[in-house]
Length: 443
Image 1: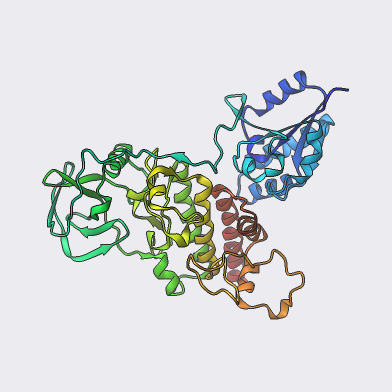
Image 2: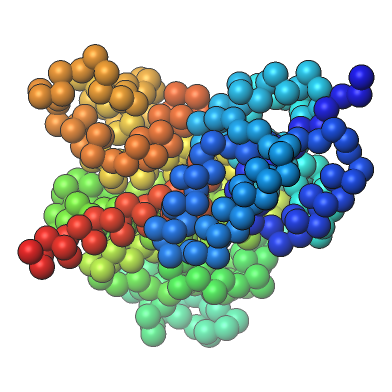
C-alpha cells in the first residue's frame, strides 16, 4: 500500500497568490493526498475580519470551503502553531509542513527529522535554508591594520565629509556603553567612541550602514562617519528631542501615559523591530534606555551604530536583556541569531505592559540579570483564588488570552511568536478597547 501524502498548510501559505496552482499540481502528482488545516484557522479568519482585512479573511474562508468540498481535508489543533503533537501520527506516512513562517520550523521540534518543512517561492516548493536559531560567523580581522586606538576626551571639533567641521557642545554629554554623545549644529548629534571601540570592524560597519541608509524616521541611523585629524572617531546622527527613555518611564510608572498608551508604545516599538528584521538587521544590544518615547507614543531606537548588520556583529551586550551571556571574544566573532533577539523583545514588552519583570514573583522581586529566570505567571486561573489575586496577576489576566499564551510559550518553552503576530494581536486589542471606550462615551 502506498504511503499517504499529508500537507499541513497554515494561514501564511494559504494567503500566497500561487498556492491554488500548486494545489492543483499536487493533486495530479501525489495520490493519495490530504490537506491538513489548523483548527485555529477560524480564529485567524475572524482576526482578519476584525482588522478590516476582508480580502485575507475571504481567501482563508474560500480555502476552508474548497478543501471541505474536495473531501480530502483534515483538521488538527496545534495551539496556534506551538504544539505539533497532533501532527505526529501523520509522520507514519509522509508529512510536509508547508508554511511561509520559519517560526514553525523552530516551534515544531517534535517533527524534527520526521517531516519536511517547505515554503512556496515563485510558485515552487523550496526548503528553509537557515534556521532562526543559527549563529553566523562575524567579520573580524586578526588585528586592526588601518585604525589606531585613539582617546577622544580632549576633542572639541570633529570632521564629517558630509557635514563638514562640527563643534562639540561639551556642556552636556550623554555617556553609554560604547562612547559619549554630544550635541552639535543643525539638530545633529555626534557619537565619539571610547578608545577600545575605535576599531577597523566598527569603521567598516559604519561605512556599510552609511551606504545602506535608512528610510525609517524612528531609527537614529548613522548619517556619516566622524574623523579627528584623519582618524576615525565615531559617527553623526540626527538629534532627538522631547523624548524619554522607557527605562526612565518605567521608573516613573509611565507617568503621563494611560494604560492603553503602553500597548500603543509596545505596538510602535515592535513596528520598528519588524522594519529592521525585514532587512536582516538585529538590534543586538536591546535595552530600555535605547528606546525613546514621545508624548504621542511614537517610539525611536537609538544607538544604531551597535546594530548587527550583514556580517558585522553587535559587539556589546547587556546581561539583563540577553538570554545568552556573551564573552568579549564571542561578541567579536559570533553573529547573533534572530531567535536570540526574541529574549529582549519579549522581556521588554512584558515589562512595559505588566510593569513587572517576567521572572517576578513574591520570592523574586529582582529585575536584573542575576535573579531567577523562572516564569511563574499561570496560563489560567484554575486553582487560584480569583477574588484575592495579587495585583500583578490581575494585570496579567487583563491581557488578551493570545498575549498570555505568547509570553507563556516563550518563557516556559522557548517557542517564539513572530513580531508580525504580536503586532496583529495588539491591533486587535487596542481597536477593541478604543471601540469600547467610544461606545461608553456615547452612552
